[in-house]
Image 1 (tube, helix red, strand yellow):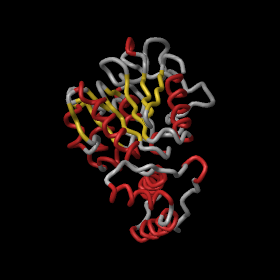
Image 2 (image 1 turned 45 degrees about the vertical axis):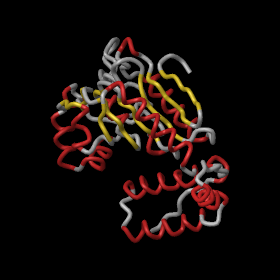
Image 3 (image 1 turned 30 degrees about the vertical axis):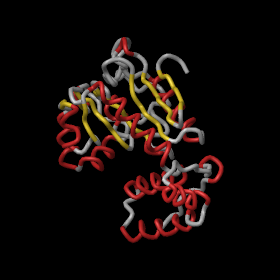
Length: 271
């Protein structure tokens, strides 16, 4: 891929790196297109067990690139979307970990909030600042922030456009953890490596889909219970279920054999 985004896959972990450090990784339409393309490739590749989204340089993403024409001047493109990353991180079947190693402003933050697990640099300045630029929050943030942090926090952050520090993100409900900037990527990679080695790929794919679908579709507890039962019927007695128990008993690393790319079927509708 071109310089706006780099992709490296090793030992089951795909590292997607926003790569415009000279512009503080300011977002461009090309970057968004490439990120969506990379997500799709990771979703379909059984060699990828987990995805880490990070950036080059000291900033994660400083928001929309204002270096040229005003990107908010006019929606003159017929294909304009306020959610340009397709699919979103939560829509792919692999766990996505956002390693927010520096400032995350505007779309730089709203992209990260679509990840499953989010690690922030303590001194990173963050904010969903779009209302201070004359536009609106994007990348489904009116939904993600509400469901991650609750309506009170969402109203505070989205309606004021104020900034906050990464160290405050866990308390707001937006981050899994906050660590010194130099530890963000190693922390994310450690989580990804553990998933790649020890987590059954079909189990985590089904778990992730059920987790997000339950929120998106507002399933009742009874509907979730029904789906959990149906999905257990899919995996119980499978080679991976046998291997998971055998590896635990033998105190060894499991050797998974399921293929998400070839064996996947969508979750049933519980309603």
